[in-house]
Length: 114
Image (cartoon, rainbow, N blue to C red; front, top):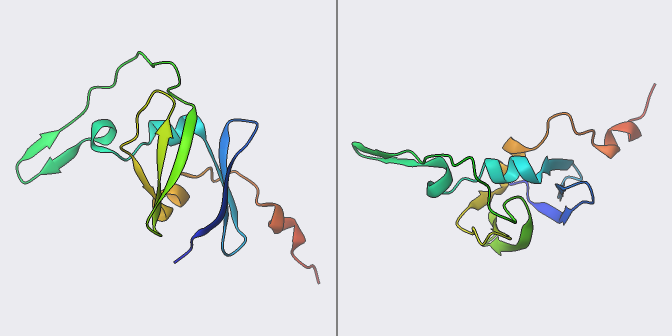
């Protein structure tokens, strides 16, 4: 399984992850929060009942600011946002899925040419 070696918040409001295969991905904090995988943000379906959250146009102070990131076992992280939202568990697979596909991995330029 591909796991991160390093997770850091950048100066341009992104979360940059260096994976154990030296691949680097980046996700904006806005995308990270807007794609929070918790039930309160994404909803859920259990048997014949569904919960679909109502998206509020109001964003509390600190909505897109990370207070802390904590590991969850060896498969995910839990992000605590400055507005105290903390129920989203971001698996490694999910973080790769929502990362910016246009982010240019700096190691790509190191490829040898024949």
